[in-house]
Picture 1 (tube, rainbow, N blue to C red):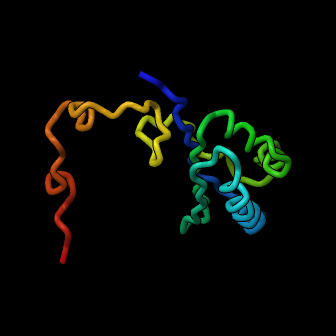
Picture 2 (tube, rainbow, N blue to C red; picture 1 turned 90 degrees about the vertical axis):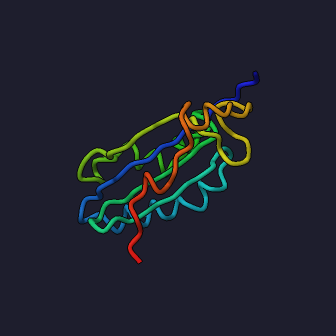
Length: 135
């Protein structure tokens, strides 16, 4: 079995200070396209919530790629002064992706056994998991 380094995901909510909300939103939005071109970036998305929070979702090929991204000067300044920009510490999560990533990047290059695909149980039937749709 050949194991590759698993992608790393970073996601969470940020609540900008009201007086800096536009500045934070513009800054983070300005990072989207350049970050997507960075080596090792697999996903980078910024979402606006109705309550003013921002939701950031990133996936990186490796922790080293994420560390390199976080060391870029504009982002480093933002991270070093985070609570000057936000009302509270981000509600953020770092995880190692265990599902295969499209394009072959994942925890293992070996396909899952049939029993692993469903957790060793019968396949899920969407009608037993999802409520009926209202027509």
